[in-house]
Image (cartoon, rainbow, N blue to C red; front, side):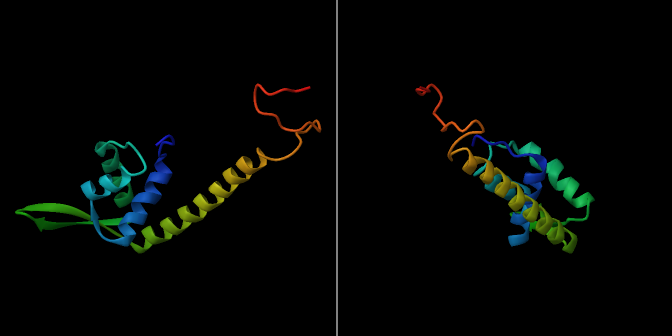
Length: 121
């Protein structure tokens, strides 16, 4: 993907995944790879920060003879997810307005928009 994940967007995506179901790190990283070329090692500091902020709880569960660390969203995490979703919506609306306005009508000087390299006679 062309657009990198910033830490806040990554936090939103991780909270959204954990909100759907308790998840473990590798499972989360594989889902994130659909929207980013994120390295697995980048995810774990985010999960640790979410835990330290009280947005997720961590518990161990046996899987094929070893413990797997799972993450469960807390009520504070649900509230943070809601807040970040609202911020994301406002951000994407603002970006859409800029993109939509770049396709329309005359510029500030009353000239019609011309493609770069176009004829400006």
